[in-house]
Amino acid sequence: MREYINKPVITIDGPAGSGKTTVSQIIANIYHLIWVDTGALYRAVALVSKQTGVAADDIQGLDQLCHSLKLTFVQQAGGRFLFNHETDISQDIRTPEISMLASRVSAQPVVRHYLLNVQRQLGKQGGAVFEGRDMGTVVFPDADIKFFLFADHTVRAKRRYKELQEKSVPVNFDTLSKEIKQRDRQDQQRKIAPLKPSEDAIHIDCSHLEIDDVVNRMRENIDKKYPRLDKREYL
Ligand code: DC
Image 1: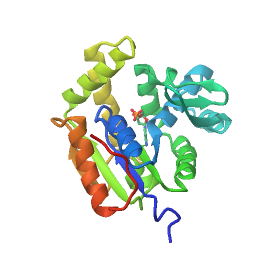
Image 2: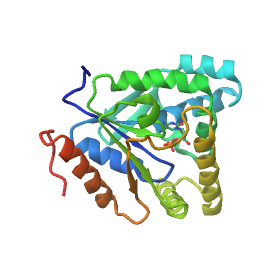
Image 3: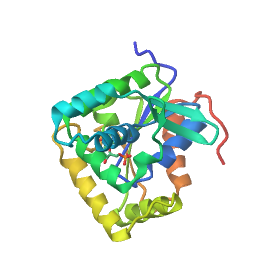
């Protein structure tokens, strides 16, 4: 019997800019589940590889680097932060350069292997929403409910552009749009754990849906399967 029979693990996979992060946080909040942004973990590896000069194809270097990390998500007033040892890296991992580097290092089996264990450790008590690329296919193949979000490329590029502008990260729309295409290609075509929907995932096309519509569609599925799951009001 699974340890988390009463507290489900929900997976939300999809490409960059599909709206995963926003809806994952809302769903976690409604159902009192923890929220794990697994992309942040790959971004942390990318950031440290840049800082220490370890190339994205240096397998031994990446292996050592991974084992030198101490990554912790910390919930504090003002949001959720990612620390490596004592350093808050939450802002530094969000640049377009780190997005591209995260996609490259994430294709390396040593990095995926290391983070697979980190993610499973975080999910072992259940009661969590995991967002990423391979949550439903590889990390939690027997998750209780799986979603796969997607959206048109232009919609995603516009969304990401707005997000970065709001965070005052300097960005050019055409460059960002090309980078998202390249990242999609890299994430979908890598040999290990590529971005793809799990066979039992519920697909949601978010191109023309508001956030609330996506959340409501997810809630219908969750409430049907877990009618007694403790939840907050969401208006
Ligand atoms: O979700 P994100 O944009 O923050 O992810 C950054 C990169 O990390 C993404 O391009 C591919 C990689 N990634 C991955 O390979 N597997 C995951 N579960 C999450 C992210």
